[in-house]
Length: 79
Image 1 (cartoon, rainbow, N blue to C red):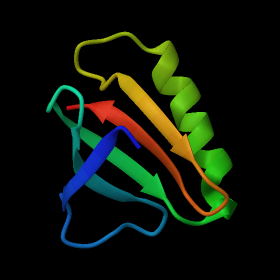
Image 2 (image 1 turned 30 degrees about the vertical axis):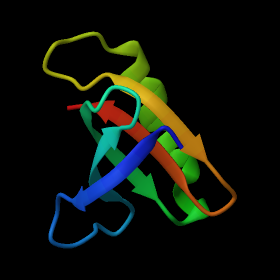
Image 3 (image 1 turned 135 degrees about the vertical axis):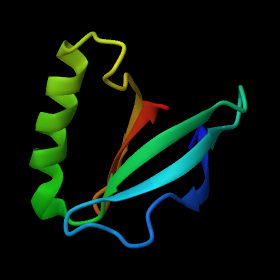
Image 4 (image 1 turned 180 degrees about the horizontal axis):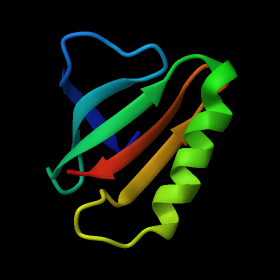
């Protein structure tokens, strides 16, 4: 992956996802990763990605990247 997990931003994970602070290896920019580990919720995160990709507002984080395996789906957002 192009990003490296640095630390968990929240003291506990939510019922569906976890939020991590990540650093992009190529640019050293800090970003946020939202990770879902239960495939049952992948469609939920895909809908969120679709909505975020349509919104263009300085107060809404821009999707920088996304990763998917059979056990994990993650979106990387600008901080």
